[in-house]
Image 1 (cartoon, helix red, strand yellow):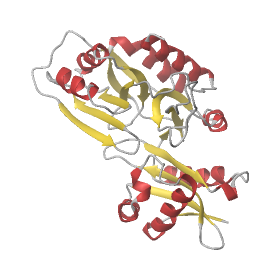
Image 2 (spheres, one colour):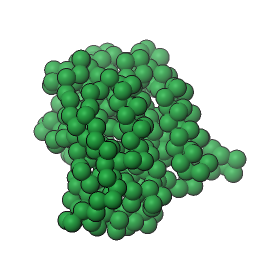
Image 3 (spheres, helix red, strand yellow):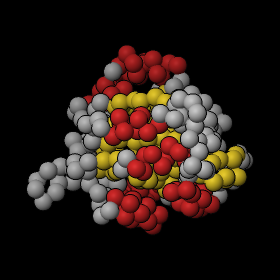
Length: 319
């Protein structure tokens, strides 16, 4: 078994690996579209490391996703063929990918262990820090438990920040009052240097929002990303809240001086804390979320911070 960096020529093998393991249920559409996958590997927006067997089959995979303007990398899309499990293959592939991230100059990365995999959660905090919990992020068809009524529930994923080297980047940010304390605490626990300013909820912007909505069909997730919160933020958020998707998320830039106005509108519309994502874009991002009855509201979080976040979100939901 050879662990190596993959190219666009490996796109068919990557897609075949995901289909062997997940059928058609994996939540990221990219890994079923060979042509699109090949383009992503060729242009560098996706960087994959894989374990290739002697017969040429891809037996393990992990990818690094790069967003335009982001200061971090996202690592994930981990899959291991059942025939190769129990050999530590995922850790070997992961080590190869983190080495690549260091070569690209990243100080840190984000990844999202599913709460259904306790070992992944436990290992994620060996050198990383949990900074959020995304409820309903994993479709019931991919993972998830069955409730008393026999219905499959959507599972959660933690948000984990993993430093790769001594952190040098320092920035300022505006903290919306509802989540100022939790973000300060998470940043302090991670050893991240920030100069925080409390945002003013009473300020209504005099301009329109710069925002984009993205839907992830297989994940049944829709996300509203505010590059800048404007006076129409309330209408944008309520439009999102009315959509039928099982999982809804709103991202706010902590570098936006109008963030408090937007977060306040989101809380009024029923959104609750999801996570703090350091360097997710050109600055840190605060994510809030809304889910429905198809979601497991008591996910199997195992680490202390994850349990605290789960309890906090549960209280905010009124459970």
